Amino acid sequence: MAWIPLAIVVWVIIEVAALIAVGRWIGFWPTLLAVVVLSALGAWLLRREGRRTWQALRQALRSGQMPSREIADAVLVLVGGLLLTLPGFVSDVIGLVFVLPFTRPVARIGLEAVVARRLLAAGMPVAPGEARVRRTRDRDGGEVIEGEIVDDDQP
Image (tube, rainbow, N blue to C red; front, side, top):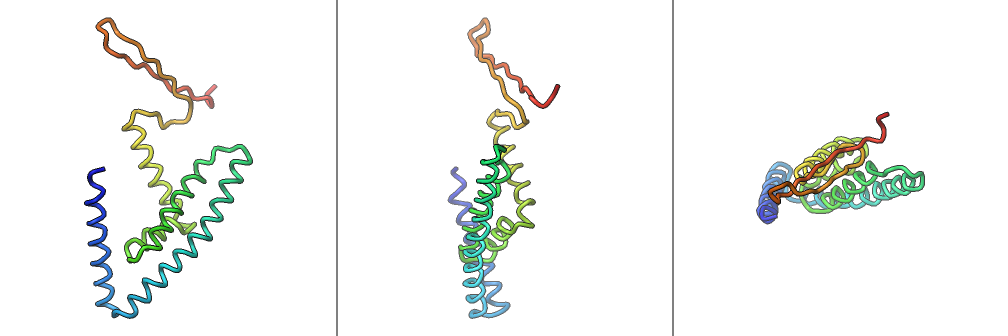
């Protein structure tokens, strides 16, 4: 968590550098217009894709399915929409990848990899199935954790 303020400062520096570069390339007023148009586009996309994602999530819940894909899409649309409404071109490009329906599957793969890595680091199973954990003590009083993953799909 200590790296978050540093990451924000680096992000702002990158965004300002990109704005200056684009401003030098196309001029101040076209750059300002592009930032405003992209923010408005981001708000519109957030509303449209957010509604679609919410409907897909509700449909999955009604059908009794595990809505993992829909939840991942909802997170990506929310974060992508937020990035699109922020001024800056770098955040807009990343936001578009998160929000657009034809690029979101790529972003979802990345999100799933990050979540799986975090779960593995925390010692939680990421494979489908049920995890069974039993804590015992050995003869010296040390804690022993035995675990197994039971996959219900296997015969």
